[in-house]
Image 1 (cartoon, protein in one colour):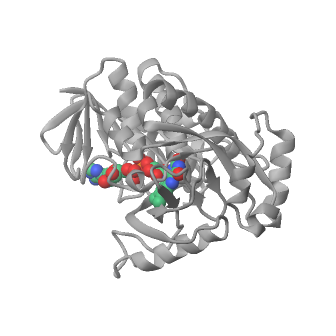
Image 2: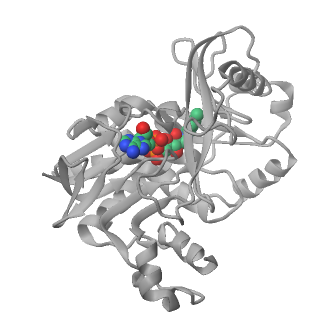
Length: 372
Ligand SMILES: Cc1cc2nc3c(=O)[nH]c(=O)nc-3n(C[C@H](O)[C@H](O)[C@H](O)COP(=O)(O)OP(=O)(O)OC[C@H]3O[C@@H](n4cnc5c(N)ncnc54)[C@H](O)[C@@H]3O)c2cc1C
């Protein structure tokens, strides 16, 4: 018997499990392939803010950035590299955004060392840029360390049933609370309002002569070099899906794209590709993450349709799955957001602290219900 069961051992599931383990709870984690075998295993895992002008997403990513920088440093310093980040605008529109960002941000901005500017191509050097202290985490190892105190089961979970106050998973494991952290892969809970999109990504590790002490982001992200190796990621491919596409993914095309984009930013001559990583990011329709209990759509429609079809429905009026929560939809910022979201989820489950409606999956139910 467990206090908490988590399905999905990516950074979201592992961060959630870690929060409860720290509280002394009995935690079981399931993944169909292994720890960080989905999007999380592919990630360059750069920890950075969002360099846009304004908006809810920028705000939450910035809150999460400040939180996760301290969190990784405090809890996982051996698997976290602090590195200055240089973000260079791709085009004129982004140059304008960066100017607004720089004029308004409360984050501490830094000068860029001449040796780093020397590594840039002429065109990258001419673009507007911004630089600050940021970091990179060792994606797979951090996920493994986070759930070291949990029971881990390799299992493709298909069967979950709520009985007598417990979730029974695959007829074998019982847990009081169930957290669904399955990323962009096919969902166990079939609810029509959860419209998560998968965006396929490819990252490579290369051996290169380039001595780069910073994380450099422009068309792709380039990691600081470590023992002659740099990571370059990632592609954004909305057409390929590992569970839906007929054709296999074309690795060589992805490699070419990554190198071509990296070479627009840095002078990168001879390189040897030593590893490929691929996976799906999971994004919601409004790009904000999904955190909290899931609405029972049919039951809520049947009982309370009038209350739903008002301009601003009260999410408390909806009916929810008992003791079941989702943490998902982190897009390209999973490693930035997960520790922050997991803390909120723990406070919600253990102390009843409300989760902001801007993150609640109920917002999608409300929109879906009005249309249907
Ligand atoms: C190439 C690439 C580069 C990226 N770079 C960055 C970056 O630099 N910084 C950053 O912050 N983010 C980055 N991201 C985004 C980040 O990786 C994601 O936001 C994050 O991995 C999402 O984590 P997750 O736990 O929600 O999903 P996932 O990591 O996809 O985890 C979901 C897990 O659930 C398992 N699962 C699914 N269904 C079941 C089931 N029925 N039973 C059991 N297990 C199941 C899957 O096997 C998978 O392991 C990148 C993503 C990609 C693809």
